[in-house]
Amino acid sequence: MVESVAPKTVRYVKLGEGGAWEEDCFARGILRMGFGSDVEQGFALCLAKDWDGFAAMWREYGRTPSVATRFANETRFFVEDDGSTLWITFSGQRLLWGMLDPGGHLTRTYDGDSTYRPLVGGWRDHDIHGTPLIKGNLAGDLVSLAAYRGTSCNVPRPDYVIRKVNGHRANEVEVAEVALAVMQEATLAVIRSLQPNDFELLVDLIFTQSGWRRVGILGRTQKTLDLDIILPSTGERAMVQVKSTTSSYELTQYISQLEPDGPHKRLFYAFHSGEAQTSDPRVSVLGPERIAAMTLDAGLMRWVMDKVG
Image 1 (cartoon, rainbow, N blue to C red):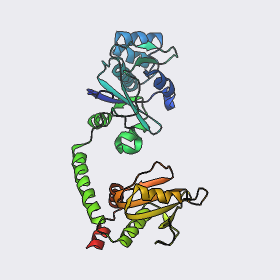
Image 2: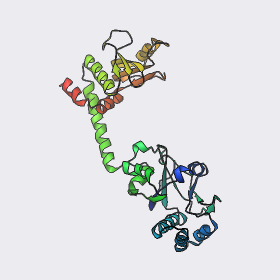
Image 3: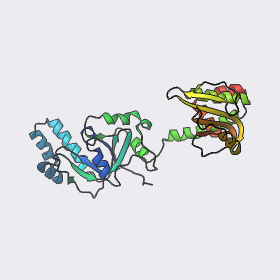
Image 4: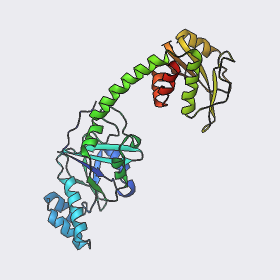
C-alpha cells in the first residue's frame, strides 16, 4: 500500500496540448512542463530561478505582460516545487496523481519547448488503497478542470482531492454509512416477514426498477423458473429463481437443470434466508444483504413496510 500524502498545495496540470505528452509522462513517471523551458535561454533562466528574466523573455517573444508573467509563474511552480505539491491530471475517465521527487533534477527534453522532472513512484490512477479514481465518482467542480484551457492551476478544493487520494471519506459520509447499515439491517428484518408470494413480487419490482422487463408469468409455472426477464437495452435474457429460504445444495440442483443452449444466459438466485454459494459464472446469487440493499436502492422500503403492516 502507498503511504498517505500530506501536500501543502494541489495543482492541476495538462500534459501537453491535447494530452500529447501523456503517454511519455505515464510511461517514464515524469512531469513535463513547456513554456520554452527547454530552449537554451529559457533553461538557463530556470536553473537560475530568474523569473523576472523568464517573463522578460516571453515579452521579447511578443507576449503581453500578463501572459508573460503567467508563463513565468506556472514554470516557477514546477521548477521550485520541493516535493510538497500534489499534481493531478485527467486522462480519459481517470484522475492521475503524483508528487515530484525533491532530489530530481530539471532535465531538458530537447524538443525545443519542454523540460521534465521525475515523480516519486510515477503517476497513479488509484487512491493509496488501490481504489480507482474515476471521473464518475468525483465532484463536478474537480472534473471540470479537465476542460481548463491553460497548462496548470491551483485546485479550488485541495482538501477534497487530498482526501480522495488518501482514500478517506467525509465525516458526513461516514455518519451516513453507519445509518445506512442500520437501515439495511432493519430492511432485511422486514423483508423476512413477507409472505412468499409477496417476496416474489418484491424481487419482480426490484428487477423492474433496475431496467429489466418481465416477459414470463410470475409464479411457479416451470420447475426452474419464477421470472423470465429481458434487458431491453441489450436484449439479454435471464431467469430468476426466488426462494424465501434455501441452501447451496438446493441451488446446485437448480443449476444442474439449466439448459446449456437455452435462451437464458444468466440465472439470478434470490433469497432472504439461508446461505447459497456457487462459482458458476452463469449464476448471480442475490442473498439477504444484497436483497436488502437492492430494496433500498430501488426505493421499495415503504412498499415492503406496507405489505408487512
